[in-house]
Image 1 (spheres, helix red, strand yellow):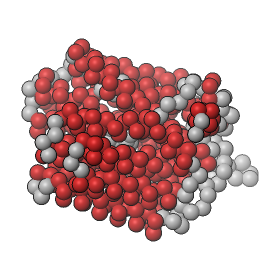
Image 2 (cartoon, one colour):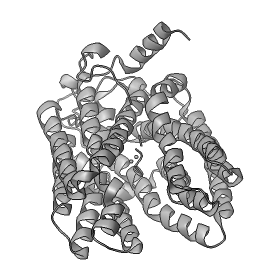
Image 3 (tube, helix red, strand yellow):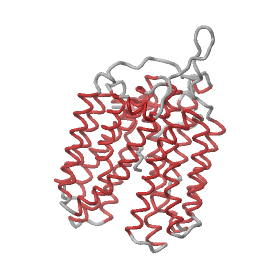
Image 4 (cartoon, one colour):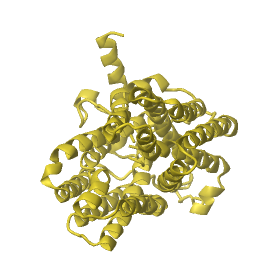
Length: 443
């Protein structure tokens, strides 16, 4: 493939989206570029403050537990209060928590700040996903989610590199930078992103149409969506397991922590370098086919970890499940948007986000227990089996619900974000470069 064809392909991937989407993309990039807290929290707690590794693990788990509550809360506020105010408020709340970590030292205060940060960070996701579904035409929604996921991972990669280089300034300084970046993200949303929540519909006589009330229980009674959430939970468990199980497995084989650092860095490198290409290759494909394929890639990639014996082999397994991640995350978000009624997009995205948060809390504990008990081979056999079950579930249970092409509509709300996008070169981010819910794990 020539350089010109690659350039043309990249331009097609980032063109044709509303201008408002690019401001949201930019806010995601800024936010994740300053995301230092979770990356360095365990080191700060153990090295700087002298807490035990057990306490550090518990505090990180509290962040995931906060997300379990934050996701449905954010979904509710997104539909009732609006996308923009929910984003601004939760970004500012997360910034306040990051700033608090720079000054508090007691165990209870740190645990509380991290728990509340988990609530705020997860609560903002439904509003972001709902905004994308509101402003982007249906046939471009999956592409938009992929681009936003790329921004998330690109920012996270920059944060990891920059944070490591700047750690000599002190962990508290990094937490302050995180707070500043998150505040700047809220400012971008407040100044540049209009509200996109769909207006109340009216009948032919101009009278408001009473929408069916949607509660969290109503969302869970939606059988196809409930199936999508449960299958996503299975995939999330498989996806989260390597972040705990892989370093322990490599250590059991006598490999150094630096080897693990190089191997896991492959995940971010592949996403940042190839998300646009993967998105181009999978564009317009059946969502059921893509979800099935991604689950199988997770199953093969994690299952093959049991057979790996060198850093190169472990890196190869990471490449396999990372491709599954790049396919799964935007496709699952787009499937959620398709199944959700316009007036309940926030709640649907909130319930879906809760599955990521539950996996982020449960999988690390389960993976550590299995590796420390039956052994790592059992863990990787289990993840392979779960991935295959999820793939079978997608293929057999959701073919009908996700078979029809989405109805082509303009943005639901007649705001500036629905206007045709400027060419990619003149968008607020001149050339797009990318994931991670990173996924909620890193997402």
